[in-house]
Image (cartoon, rainbow, N blue to C red):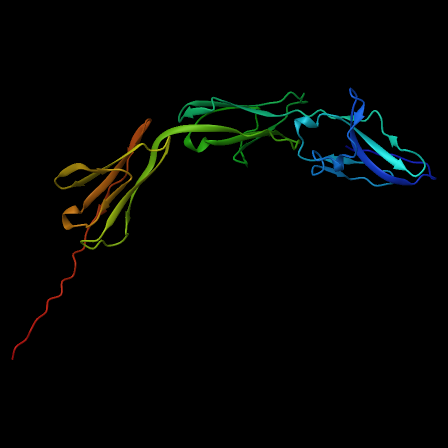
Amino acid sequence: MRCTYSCPPNYTVQKTFWFIYDWNSKQDSGDLSQSPEYSRRVEYLGDKYSDCTFRINQLRESDSRTYLFRVLTDLDGGHNGEPGVTLAVTDLQVMVNPDTVTEGQSVRLNCSTTCTLNGSPAFIWYRDGSPLPFTDQSHQFTASSEDAGRYSCAVTGYELHSPAVTLNVRYPPKSASVSVSPSGEIVEGSSVTLTCSSDANPPVQRYTWYKKNDTGVWQAGSGQSLNFSEFRSWNRGQYYCESQNRLGAQNASALLVTVQGRTRTSLIKCFI
């Protein structure tokens, strides 16, 4: 709020501050820099000569008030800059319709405000704090798993951001893979663990393990991990897992697991 004032030459300014005046109760708030609600958000940018510029940071809708400037001098009780400045703060709102979708369904975003915007303003959209490429007030798209996140909007040229709204995108398992521990060559008789990993929303509800070799394919177990306390030569083969939630299932690529035999040392006795 830019502001200027002047005092007669024989007056000495002792204090300047901004306050809120309630016309209904006929009461004022006193110095806003001393108010718990405002003390960390207000800045007096003026001086004790002519400039009374004032700033409010991190605007809230509740900041819609009438603000007045007061100057106290050594010769009287002070003067108010009436009628003051009436500030109207509108709250931007994001609407995500619907806010929970299955991948492939349509979603519409809308940035609404009660403020009258002149011309054809551009809107700034954010997902998880990162700007998005579209600038229209209402935007429709087909949802994918990468679109899940918290959306907020702003109007170009204004600092006020809307509260964030979450878009939840459900999808069947994807990026399924199998890993083996320990990695590298497996020595016969050692402990081995195969682990199935997959991205899904809702989370994977069931993991099923399969083994295949020259003779066919059969189920080898269930659960996210397949454990062998002693891996033997007959355990070798190609293993893959199936990840499943209520939206679908996906098979991971098969992982070939081989075994290296233990080295046996023979003791040879020589007789002469």
